[in-house]
Image (cartoon, rainbow, N blue to C red; front, side, top):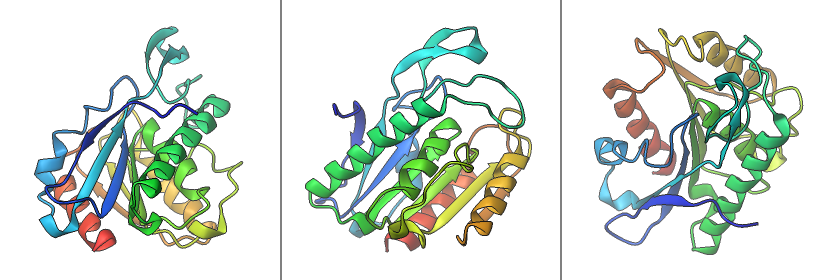
Length: 219
């Protein structure tokens, strides 16, 4: 498998941990690049940030317009009808990036998967089915698209999961984040949930919360 093209930000000292962060529909790997300095992570954590670019594909809900997307979204309804085969393919591509981090000397327990919107849906699938224990899963303004089909790997049955969502999100309504919390809890996970008075975006308070969570998870 050819690796996804990525934006990579290296720490000032040799990396000890990695965060693979997936963007949302129509964006690219540069979307969350400006967030890294705002996290103000302690230098000793030595975190490498990896922002993959999704492939460009036709997206049904946008009239078949070709844009960066992890998978096709077929209907804009409460159930988020998606092209699951494409989602699984993207999750496998993300897992290949995890494999590369291990080859570069990063322990699997020092790898975090983060994803915004449809990137978060891929993140759920990639992290929860990975065959080695990961550091954590960060789900941002997203939904658990493969909840009814996923086969969680025992290696990540205890993975720390943090869900953040906006109370004013009209793209991925907060009910999706709340439902993800319920699904995960029913599956035996212990996810954490926090909401912010924001739309389908990120805010400074969320960035501060992400920083604290990363420091706890990777520290």
